[in-house]
Length: 89
Image (cartoon, rainbow, N blue to C red; front, side, top):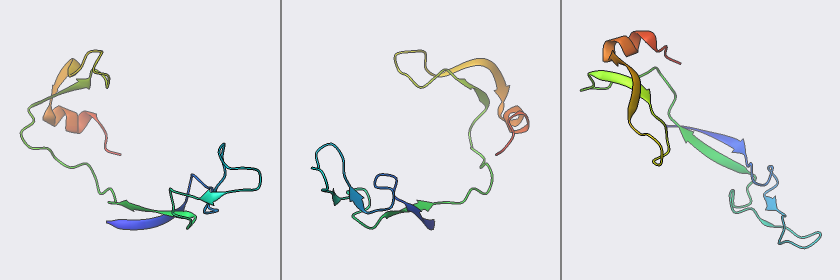
């Protein structure tokens, strides 16, 4: 895993937060970064799309909401067709 430091989005890098509950001229230590002003992000560099064993067919997703249709929809393609039709990032 790689690690980088980024400016804390919650406090804008100040380490202090001042919002609705703090009085005029008052701040609290930012909970998101513990007052450091930065956050460490751990990530694994992308090296290309990985293969997935055991998959025979692929379709588009019906969506993300359980209240709506779930599962696959639309045209069915083989795993090999997916690999050639859908470009890697």
